[in-house]
Image (cartoon, rainbow, N blue to C red; front, side, top):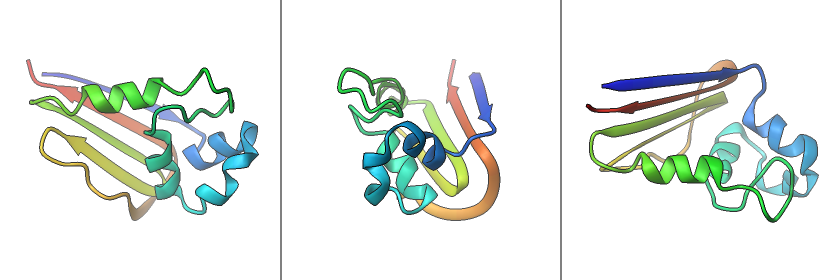
Length: 104
């Protein structure tokens, strides 16, 4: 199994809104920011030619034996081959943690 984690001191909601304030009405909560960040074309830069990275990772980790967990602020979402959980409120994490695992 391959597993990787990435941690940032910034919450996704803060990162998205810092350079792209037009998203403010779409991200009232951390869990909304996580769900929005997984959409194709959504980027913290606001550029129409960006926003494939996290979307592409999410799509790739829907394959069998793979899993993606994103925990940001008080929001969390999990993706695997069978399901994508609804974004949910959870215990505060001071920043963003992205964990991906791929079975060998």
